[in-house]
Amino acid sequence: MTDRRRHHDMGGLEDGPVKVSEHNSEPWEKRVDAVRSLLSDEKRNLLSVDELRRAIEDLGADAYDRYNYYERWMAAMANILLQKNVISVDELGRKMAEVEARQGNKPI
Amino acid sequence: MSDHHHDHSHDGYDVDPLHHHPPQPDLEDTPLTHHQVMQMAVAELLIEKEIISADELRRQIDFMDTITPARGARLVARAWVDEGFKSRLIANSKAAGAELDMDIGPIPILVMENTPKTHNLIVCTLCSCYPRFLLGIPPDWYKSRSYRRRAISEPRKVLAEFGTDLSDNVGIKVHDSTADMRYMVLPMRPEGTDGMSEGELANLVTRDCMVGVSVPGTTSAS
Picture 1 (spheres, rainbow over the protein chains, first blue to last red):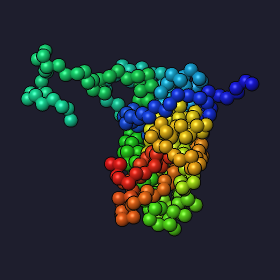
Picture 2: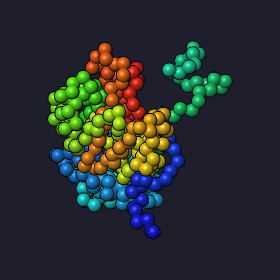
Picture 3: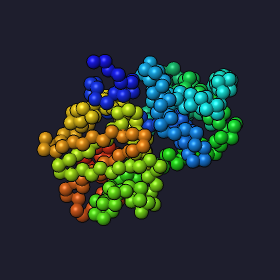
Picture 4: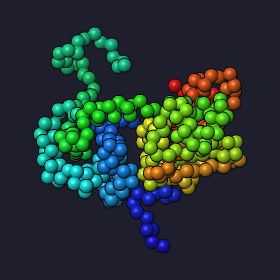
């Protein structure tokens, strides 16, 4: 039988022991989370939990495995903002180049 | 605290070649990763477009820092000392939280009570849904592939990996969270805690107990 599951749908599959690991959230991870919360609130209503989940699942198996947790969130959030024309590809590319050019500056 | 206790100043450059500090780059000095650059770019664009403000962003981060498992523990301890509250918490956690001036957030949370016969465990097999308004940000292992895969098929083994060995007489119910429905475990009050105050009881309730990978002991975890 062909397994028709999508990549994220992993409940019940076999795996090794759980690595009981954790780390304190890094500042950039908190900022990803905070922006997500703001975009999801009643004032903005630009990003529902389901939309974020769908966008994470749509990253594809390769990115899903390669990116860490908040990287997935970040990539998915950016994709949603692009799809909704809140930001454009052009704006994002230019702004990222600007941020890179001043690497080392303290983030907002 | 560092364990070295040489008497020297850190104000200037340390030129003594025999006195080598291990490399500890400041976070600000590490090159940003692609996704970190993207994060800053998106945040700045959203601020420029006045969709969010820098102030809102800071306040949101401050608010998130205040949400810890102590919130869930407070509900559990109250439920242990007040049967009526326990019933209300299980029936409607949002209303019960409001009794303690606690907002459990926009997504419903079902409180699952452990009994001598049934132990509850929560997971999100599809992603990482978690009762964040009561427990804060989920730990890495909760989001790990192994936990997501195995919690529903071999929960007893998974619990053993957390050092929790349940008797075979105890059944395990696993609750798979979704974007629209979250769960929290109401652990059983440990034996020998009769004389404890509500605050002392709350200190026994760890995050892991409320996820269900652990059970409370009789001494404070903190």
